Image 1 (cartoon, one colour):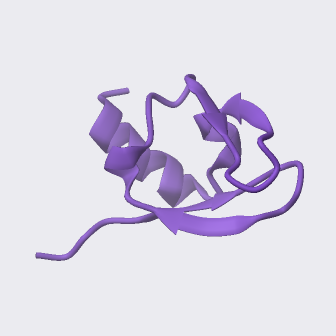
Image 2 (cartoon, rainbow, N blue to C red):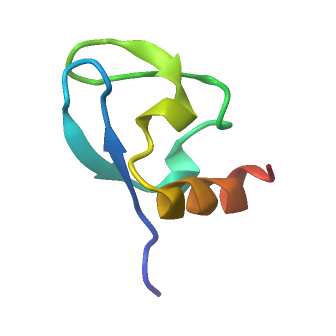
Length: 61
């Protein structure tokens, strides 16, 4: 089985990383950058439209 992943980019410090979309909360919930602790909605950290669609599949949006 292939594991899904999404790309994230912090709008504040530009940290770039990937994670499993099931580990993210709802798109409008608060999410913290692991490097600079910037707090924004999860959707603001997603890099691409594909990443947004992937998270939507897992959170039911």
